[in-house]
Length: 127
Image (cartoon, rainbow, N blue to C red; front, top):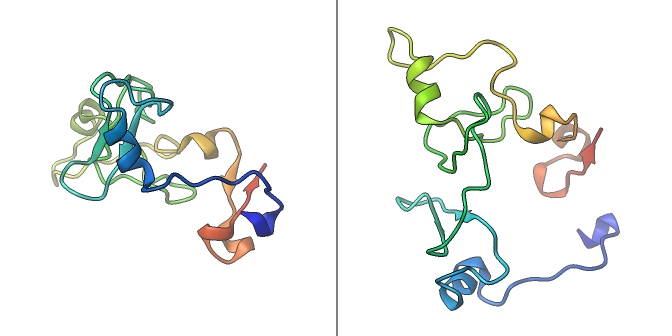
């Protein structure tokens, strides 16, 4: 980020997980949940609101459990259980009409241009 000219960069001592342990009831300044790469899927404060939505139906949803990726940038997206069931085919896989599974950044035409920048870690928003 500093190479891209961002000057106000901060890091939580111990990370988000430790911060949420310090504020288990309301999450302090943290809003929503933190996505994890283990069987928990996510963790957050006891009193956390669902702040994300299914990319297909726009209903509140917060769990990455469908293995779906944005058809444009290939980032993992949230697809709710109802939409997965509604679009299930005979092969037991869910298939969606073209243009349906698109992440919020691509919908807003602001997506990571990983090809231009070499990789996602130093990509910038375009659009």
